[in-house]
Structure formats: C-alpha cells, structure tokens
Image (cartoon, rainbow, N blue to C red; front, side):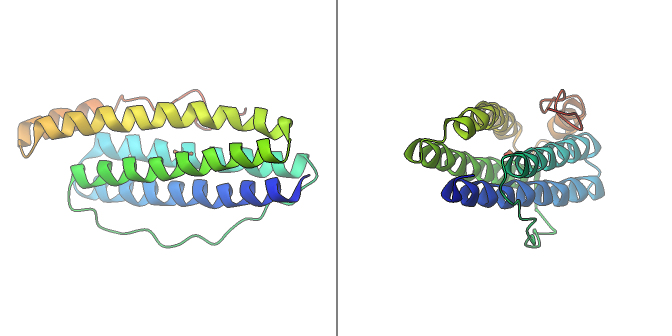
Length: 171
Ligand code: FEO
C-alpha cells in the first residue's frame, strides 16, 4: 500500500483510539455523578470509536500495509459539568473531521482511489457525529443550571442513538 496513505491511516488509528479512551473516561465520570443516561450514551460512543479504529486496522492489513496499535495518552478523569463534557466532545470531533479531511487529501494526491472510497464512510460518519454533538450542546445551553432540565436531559440521553447499527457490528 502507498506509504504516505499508510502513514495517515495509522495516524487516524491514534485519533480513533484516543476518542474511544476519552469518551470512556467521560462515561465513567457521568456514571459516578449519577447521570446514568448520559453514561450509557458515552459508553456506546466509546465502543463506536473503537469500531472506527478496528475498521482502519483491518483495512490497512488487508491492503498489505502494517497497522500500528498505539499507546494512548491518559484522558482527564474529571469533567466538571455536562456542558463541559459535550463542548469538549464537539471540539474533539471537529479535530477528528480535520484529520479525516487530511486523509482524503493525501488519497487524492497519491491517486489512491480505493482508500479514498473507503474513507468516505468516515466523512459521512463525521458529519453525523458533529451534527449530533451540536444538537446536544444546543439543548444543554437552553437548560443551563436547571436541575430538573438536566434530569430530563439525562433521561433522554439514555435513548439517544449514536449510529447504533455499527456499534459492535461488522462492516
Ligand atoms: Fe470516529 Fe467520532 O470519530
């Protein structure tokens, strides 16, 4: 497989693994704070990111490259508030989108149309994830510090879908 493409895909593995780790830490914080619906959503989100990572590992290896499983930086343990969690989640997803766009760029420069085709799945996934994070942020801004509002928000998050058809599934 093209070396530059292999390199950026391996960098993307780091991004997806870090996302999974970060959301896992957020889930654990939310669970300990009594936000069980949000915790459930974030545990699912963390699984989803692991799936994104796995898909890259398999693709690189199937195409004759070598997937590198990275060491992951320790994520924060404490997150202060729900709004802090989701603003940092949105910020994080925006950097992931930039990184996916960079993979697209490199594929085009190297004329690797197979990987270009493969990475389109991530392009649409990022669109969905950013949109969902923005919707959640809008809700939280409306709620502010209202405890009753936060209680209802958390209850709704239990059923908020983070592309459930791919969580734990095969692609
Ligand atoms: Fe796999 Fe949310 O980026």
